[in-house]
Image (cartoon, rainbow, N blue to C red; front, side, top):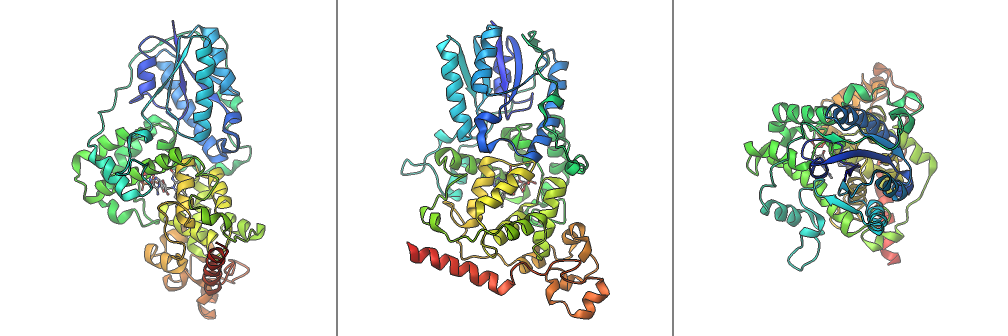
Length: 472
Ligand code: FAD
């Protein structure tokens, strides 16, 4: 009997255990655009752009090997069992998907298949270590990153990646399926126009990106990763999110030339932050919706549409934050250092709920990832298990001066400030009038005054924290 290969967030041929298992016999690869089961975590707009192009590449690669990809849309809880019945498939192979909604969906699919004598086989491969496998000394899941990372490292090298199959024995699908365009993944407006300048979705693009990073930037990653004006990080996040590359492949490519020290060692530890987020989400499925520290449920945020909108548009009046928010809009990605600064300003000085920021990221990041996005927002907002303490409030001016000292980043994304000298670039409101005049900047006209004045922003944030504590 044939098998179905149900591809979800493992859009690659190499090191794909589900493909390896299904490809041993006659196989029908299928992708189902399933917004129903995902509910409010349906793929956001920028990530849909990515998905469109990734599916195009994957479809071509599978067709070349003899097993064209069937594209369908609908509720996979019905679509997959129905397709299995029509093809007479004995088994459906898929890669594990750790989001809570996907777990529930997979359980439903498994049940429906089983009722007809078929089976769903889930394969590892999205993570280095499956969440059930690691426990701390008390037998509980890790809640703190450092011991978690040590435990993963102690497991040693992961198994070597699997090769891509050369040929597949595809079966004729029982229906024509949809054309890629009919999935409607591309945005109707042209806001993603600049994305292709920065990204090459798909497995080949992921491999090229990994090689390029290891050759050019990895050695200096310790320093370069904090400088948003340089190309110092790997930009592998969307490739990893869609599974165009497995973490095991990244490990094996990066590790041979490094001990735990040095740029590549630091880089591997970042990959472990991804693992940690996924473990958290697995063990604490409320992560996207509720603060892991329960006391923060009563945090006195002050929702304000105008402030949220100013932040979304990159018009807070804080240059490093505005540069980040505009980078996000233009490239569908933001540098990690700036994500931290921008998120911190939103939840602290501007007192906007972290979940509103997370929702904006969800829609605008090409790497939007339920585990990473939720865990990092909770980290910034001080309500995660291993979070930065709330009272540590990033100062966007000092952060800007430190990590964008030459101003390359701000000048690239906030061109109206480009002619301000470095000294004033990160706090234009403090610049003397002649300096502003010389640079051709009128605050409030060409560039906004700060949405909240620096001193009062900090004071408000700390007062809110006291308010929450008093309410306990
Ligand atoms: P590199 O520095 O090259 O790191 C390599 C890989 O390690 C990344 O691709 C990523 O998979 C992983 N990684 C690095 N830092 C983190 C981290 N802090 N947490 C988890 N994994 C990490 N990352 C996402 O993939 N999706 C998100 O939706 C997301 N939302 C975020 C929201 C906020 C508020 C913050 C502060 C961070 C968020 N991150 C998210 C984490 C991080 O910013 C990105 O993974 C990173 O910027 C991606 O760029 P890179 O691939 O060049 O990173």
